[in-house]
Length: 121
Image (tube, rainbow, N blue to C red; front, side, top):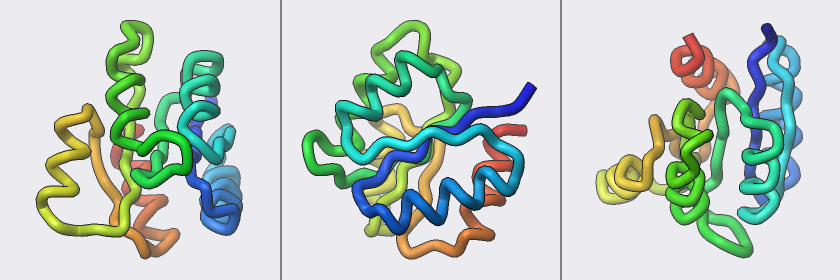
């Protein structure tokens, strides 16, 4: 069965690049540009993995992550936070909200592909 990925970011170029990469890797991809849409897509589609930007226009990614973790039917979804800070406090905040991993922007598409593959295997 094809694994599904939800890419959540408010930067269209980032969403496009990640979506194209994930499609090329054989994943089914959906996208969202804000927290509310991310929650709606998550509840409707139950993706295997979510790439979630920490900084979104309506609610931050940490809040979205925590809200997803509060849903009983979303416990098995892998969440990888994307943020611009590699400071330990930012990484710990992601883990505290329920994220399984993190990518620090800017990152290479090869790094993103490897991180995703490692988490889905």
